[in-house]
Length: 617
Ligand SMILES: Nc1ncnc2c1ncn2[C@@H]1O[C@H](COP(=O)(O)OP(=O)(O)O)[C@@H](O)[C@H]1O
Ligand SMILES: [Mg+2]
Image (cartoon, rainbow, N blue to C red; front, side, top):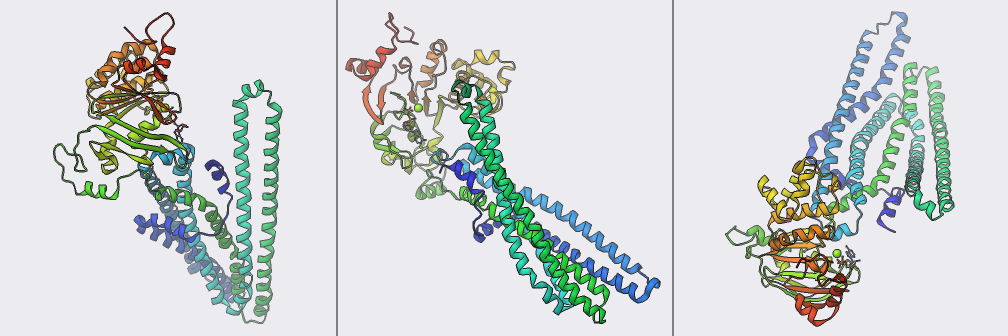
């Protein structure tokens, strides 16, 4: 089952109650102890006040019965007014407190999750779709905070206190009669529990089908051209009918359950009340019990059901939300696969900053990099890189070429330590890079990627992302150097043009130029260009070729490109295929060798021209 499938189904998995999970979730209320305490107190008071009204009724009836029309009900009236005022105040307070607490909890849990997401390694994100993570951070967090506050802290506490107060009042009024009536309570509790769970589950089913029908509808409408082109209309209609049929069944089931539940519960309640009236009425007739007491008693008996049903709903909700809780706590509890080793972290903590030294106490300068027998596979997957040996002199340019899927981007991911080798070692200045600070190492890089990411904001802000304290002039200089200035000037607001979410108001080529300027401004020790010019047209690339050369000067650079014209000046060219270096050397050496590189070069030289596409003489 894929993660998305699992997500779709675990809503419906009402498993046993997981007390530990809820205890763990409740630890998030710790920073708000006072509010939690106040909320529980108010919930308890609300329950107690709720239960006090029948007592008042009893006193009114008994007073009138004893004194007739001469009875003075003013003190009782005052008592009633006070009770109502208290109840109003309590309700106002708990709605306010609960709202505040719910928002705070949701915020806290989300913040913990977000902090973790920043820290987790790429391998974590490989396995989880963005949509899945978004759902965890938004709806799961909100849902848990809601249930914790409104369900656990409010309804459960309120329900318990109403039950306790009601039962106490009944025992106080007439203990033996109370025992008789309360006999139905366990049965009532059990039925409420079972039915609420089933009803909720059926409702979720219906909702699940509903969203799938919407999705299928959406897909069909959006993909209508394709559907028609492939004459798939009938098949799609069939799928739609199936889904609708399933939804119909789930809805009917839901209706049947809801329909059966209420009469069942009402009958049981009536039985209890009937018992109370029969036995109590007998006692009232014989004078052993006042009329007011009998009425109060029967009122209590009829009210037992409310809190019980409320609590059964919360309990069922909690069981349904357990999967969400597990997912969120699981996310927060995940350890990053790539992180500082304990001894390195200790070294960083103990380090006193000194000139020329990085935070881990070792040299700040990036020296020669060496790959020693490095192999790598994603997760449990096959080897993607196999026995790579390589020396990268400081300040040199290494070009990687070869077929798609050969492992070039993986090479870069390993070098940047987004992933670590499964075998072998990568050394920097003779020190294995796992002995170094992860933050220090990753801050040495800037990259321009095939599909560059821009943040929503202006062009200027996006370039400045490379170096936050750069002046406007620095930003424009960087843009000029990489040949981005001309197109930026032509945008409506120049450098202040909003690029939209993910930069989607710019073309890929324009995004590449902006991220190129950003990387240049960052002035990193190691520059990575992974098919960075793939979406820039040959004309522009030709224009900025000298800028590229100037950017590459004096810094270590890893250059991945399909257009060989871009890589011919590299100090070392590696041809990578199926995870191995199959050829290496300079452009001249490789052409003389007459192997794969020479063959590729030959294919890219335009016919009747001795120069390959995109190369100026
Ligand atoms: N995140 C990933 N998880 C699993 N497999 C991956 C991942 N990224 C790449 N691969 C696989 O690794 C191989 C090399 O991919 P890549 O390094 O992107 O090649 P290139 O950049 O040379 O086109 C491919 O078979 C690809 O399917
Ligand atoms: Mg790639």
